[in-house]
View (tube, rainbow, N blue to C red):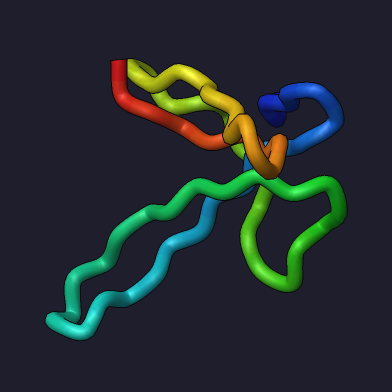
Length: 61
């Protein structure tokens, strides 16, 4: 089940860093992105909202 917050859906995708390491990134979007899939909120994270832009973000507890 995908996590949503005030109309924003949480997506995740795996990216390859310069050193060759794989890392999972999380981001919010209102529309379906070109790459990434809807996902659940990871454990030990909470949602914050940027006061200026209104965009949600994940932050560690």
